[in-house]
Length: 331
Image 1: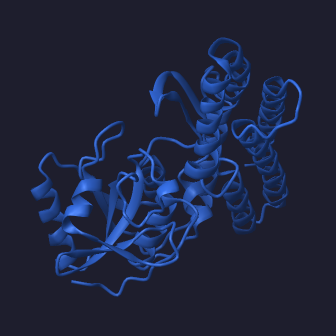
Image 2: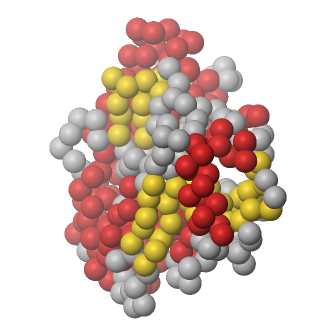
């Protein structure tokens, strides 16, 4: 059971699953456009929820939301299933593959044997595409790799039913209807407005306000929790920004590419100019991550470094607030 599947490498797994599933169903879309149409840029700080023993921080909405939003805006219909029984989960997947239906699966990262040890941690919202089966081996398109891999039945079951936060429960999905004609004009505008509203939300833990809350928390972590715990939380912040928020800067570079593409599509020069501004903000995030990483590895010579990091993040929040106000007006 193997379809004529064309593997496409991307920066982020959910974007990549979208691109690969749609491309192999005849609809070509770039990763930045898929991400932007799904209003994927986000920020939320949840200090009352711990993930890997650190406060929960995310630079994107919940897993699955990007694809659902994009699909709804474009009129694409998706089938989704979750299972309590691993055997039924395998049976449904095998049925799809027998019909040459490449299928998206949500899996845990920790037990993926093809990931290097340094990239394997407890994160249960990784997206892969299963596109075929040879004997007892499933053929896997992992969007963040430049080549396809395979997993045995037992290996795939283990990651599809990983335990812990955001347990995937055998989650699988695939598109069933794609309109013949898709005009992106209104969808792009709706998606941009949604992102602007999210980032400018009047909620302390969301968007630029959430960023300011984290900035102030960095100093508190140091004073109240000590160096070791403060650095652990900083490491988690950087991991969520540069590994889970793949593409760099917590998705800022991908979003900049989306605005560039959207500006060309809409013939809107202001969006093209704002794409460059977003890329510059992404550079600021990268600089922040670099300095935070030096602190974590005890290689920083900066005095009062926690206050410096806090001030840097406050300045980024100010830039993003001004940016999203301009972006909202641009559409």
